[in-house]
Image 1 (cartoon, rainbow, N blue to C red):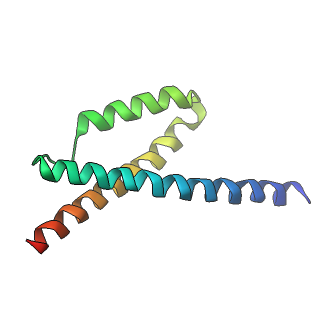
Image 2 (image 1 turned 180 degrees about the vertical axis):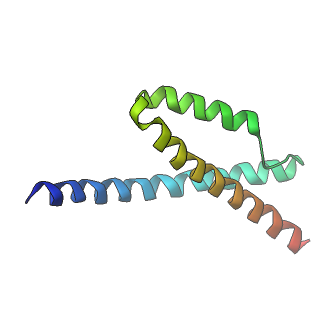
Length: 95
């Protein structure tokens, strides 16, 4: 196996782990959406997002990767909010 094949194997393994974690995260997002719906709270919580980003960048502790992590995590947050909006919208349609 050459270095490229080795690197791609690692990427494939990490992708599979990320999918499992994504599913787990989105189940928690569903719980958050239901809580917000029951308590008439907005989906967007800017201060929470800011806090999460700061905490995660501290954990990352790699300046070279910060920009790319923030791009990645902004996508995660966008998907999480979109999922919450969809759950809340579906609830209102059923009423």
